[in-house]
Image 1 (cartoon, helix red, strand yellow):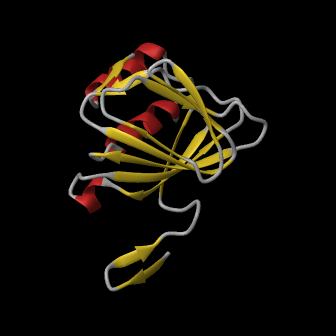
Image 2 (cartoon, rainbow, N blue to C red; image 1 turned 90 degrees about the vertical axis):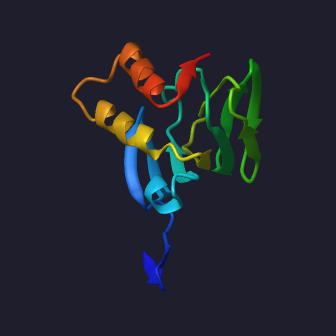
Image 3 (spheres, one colour; image 1 turned 30 degrees about the vertical axis):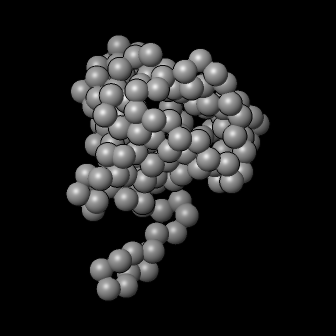
Length: 150
């Protein structure tokens, strides 16, 4: 990381690292740095990894910019496939999930506004245990962070 007058250049794959469902998330900006306005992560999705439960954010929008690979999104029941340099905005309240159905890892930038990095820190703790969390444990965590099942 290169620091210049209070600002930082954060290289690819670096930042505050958390993981879940085989994904690696490198946070580039978190709530503490943005006054809660947004969080931004670089996320690597493993091929065929477990998808997040379909959900909706009650108070946050989520934006995805695919850096590499193909990511499959399902938004309000419609499936989309996005490749390198393609963007998808999921407005607050829209039901969605996403995953990598390809044979190679996919990388994307994910922005949450307002910030949601606290959710991912707790999710990392759940997935760091010897046994993966149950769907019920994940739903309870989602609920605590303004996410509801779709």
